[in-house]
Length: 588
Image (cartoon, rainbow, N blue to C red):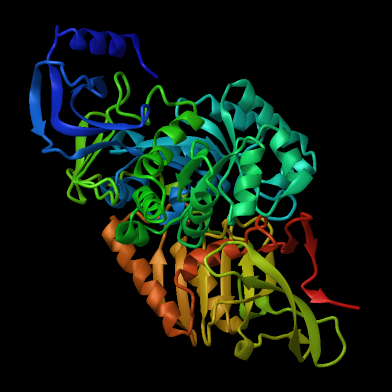
């Protein structure tokens, strides 16, 4: 928000009473308000834009000749969980900012589920060091599935109301339909509190259509980032919801959605971009929001429309277009320079009037700060984890039994609910490795219940060994998939000993591991080191037969109790749409 001093300074500078700090001359301005591109100069004082008048002749302390490059507003990621990058907020800057993203709207529900309000404050302590803006989508679901999972913390209506008052807060974070359709008063109170503050409510309406979606939208939900096809996209637009077109590591939606938008002549004004969850190496290799923009243009979206989706559309949605989203007088000077607007590759990125990145690199390193010791000690077992912890006793007679099965869907976080027949040996249900049916388990890691939920999954392709990870959305207990109980036990204990991370184990030996001390979710290391470590872990998983491209990202979502059709928590197998526990074994 603008202060009196800022307003007065910009006005007086525009009147020529003070020199500007910077003049960007010989630039082609991409004006997202008027949908024009034209040559001009951009004048900046402190953090804000003073003038874009081509005829202005203001004094400036520094002049940069842009040589006809395009000036594009800094990109906005409308919904993301930075914890999924495995990087601290500081380390994230080195891979994201050079791609042109200057604002992230971050739902910090991952660290909130682990460490509550104090965890949020620990993250926000980094903000003064960041060369980008972190706006907060206040986590609405801590825990995500009350009564169906064990989490590390709880944010009730009172706590959420207080956090919504924070200056950084722009919305209530993603709220899944079960909270509305089952008329849960606590969540309706959170929605009401948000709307009364004239802030928006983010949605998470995966798989919902028809009257259920109408009821959901009627509560005041503003958007959805879970659309995977055109039917879902158009159904939300018809109800007055914005659609966040997502491209993450395991949720690849830009191609299908933007092709359909172009083919059906859908208006772009209510479409915006997000990443949701994207690993750092993929941001480095293919881009961040600039990837969404560039790919949309390749699919036939006019460049201006794609840029507006990444800038002014998002700013208007969050009701912050008076501050960001355009290169216009009084707004914050978040600017990308690029030689081509049909394939945006920033040559320079400015954040609040300062050059923060050039030619793909930060101008100054953003060092990782000190995080409190307590946030690095969040993995506790109430009871020892042994191979027997993962044994699943059968209630059936005979040597075969029928089970409910989670089946992966390629490049999506949703899954299919299948059934299958598995062998029973000595009274226990076993894997069927030849048919890619593996054991999946979630181990409670907050020292509260000692629960271990066990189920089965198809789609990982492992032929031997096990994988484990302390980021399992959204409860963030330890999730493991494996071909045998012994390796799953070793992997879970490795994560306990590290106090968070991921592990690849085969024949009792650790093939690869990665330490994630900040809440068991993020590394303290620089981005390059983290990306090398996750790359090594992925290779190790592939050496065991794993056939999916982002195994740990998929592993982190497969247990989610709010994404259809099945989820798994420390309490057991979840029927997501009906929000209830079900048996793994199907008995007549």
